[in-house]
Length: 79
Image (cartoon, rainbow, N blue to C red; front, side):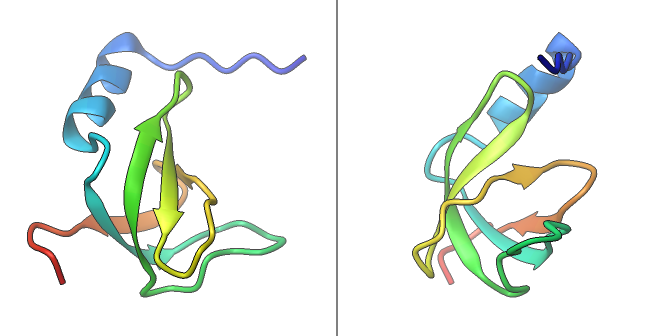
């Protein structure tokens, strides 16, 4: 079993910055098998205990974001 630890302060920061309902635009996803296309927008579902930002993408996908690996930006207003 793989164990991933994330600093409590970082996890709290992620959850405060990306609460459920936050809109995101993807710039790059480094998923080697089936990444979400750049430019796709979506809505945050939740941030889990290892810091993955779970997404509901507007194209129907539900693949999560990994901070520090994937590149994305928070949308300040609905686009």
